[in-house]
Image (cartoon, rainbow over all chains, first blue to last red; front, top):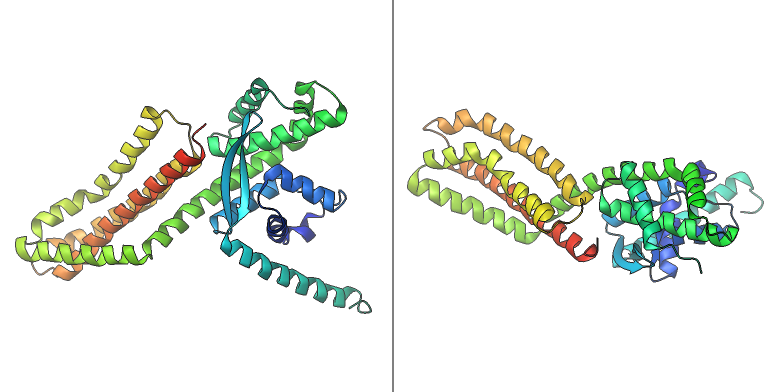
Length: 110
Length: 217
């Protein structure tokens, strides 16, 4: 992931937010969506994405569905009910964080 | 739209398996990721040369893929212990534990604790037998691939085997005395049986999940 130290803490929130907007997504699709939305600025690597997805799955925030697509199996992730609630919390936390950082780095904008 | 053939998918599968990505469930997700990335790259470069694109992709991303594999295994272990804990605190499980304590206490009151304690000494060894049977059936009879959740259950069993064995050693002396308290004996034996039953339940749940989700592997 580019700028990894700054973005690392927000990876779970990014994943949850994307899944909140779509019914289900698979790993590669998430990386491409993030790349497109950030115009190539943020590139999530496999080493960062999949452990995050599996952790969210183990915490019960994501549910999985396996389907056969193009000669291979594809694992889709979707939000659980708890995951949907947690997404709202995480987004609020992130908004607060951005506001605080803005107040610190450019007080005029805050 | 460029789509990889079955042979090309199989090639990625073999490559990952030989790169120590042993478990089919982890590999399945990696195959899809690598496959989708290669298809996209082949479209972009407007080429049919799968092997060159694959080689370039692996040069750039192999270490990240293997890192993902390593971290996945750590998450599997944590996830299994969490699920076991969740099973333990379910009302049904708590009721089962109480019933086990009462049942063991009644048996001890009627028959004495000597015979039960003899069984208790062998319990840690006996508790891993069901897992070995389930594991052998799964791999040999149903001929399914190696899955991370199932194989890592062996680690969970080993941890609990050590705990049960330690309890056996610690309580052996106390249980041999005639003044040993029946309630203490009942509780200790019930904990052992309870944990073993939950481990079996978890193993069964995991096997079922794999059977449903990965039936085509």
